[in-house]
Image 1 (cartoon, rainbow, N blue to C red):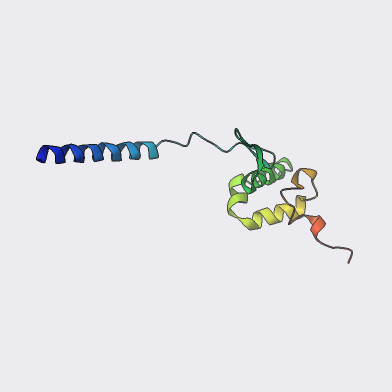
Image 2: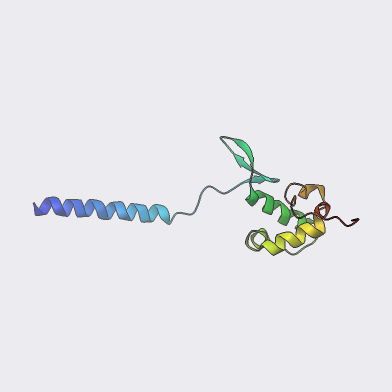
Length: 108
């Protein structure tokens, strides 16, 4: 009876070690963006907020702004500031839809 209990314990311990080893592996799947769209094998291109923010950072960098995609992801104000200044760029049409200069009525 004790031998059976020891085997069960060993099996559970090896299973836990396997789960820990898998959890410690670096993420192999990285999100790939094409403009505002995430590239998927199954569904093709899918519009995602993550890729839109990546696009915002990339366009801002092309204008010489010292901003990272991480800053755009983590600080909504950075996104708004970039969109208000550069939102007229056609590359940001979808990404900055809610914040671009076209959404303000300067002539009213």
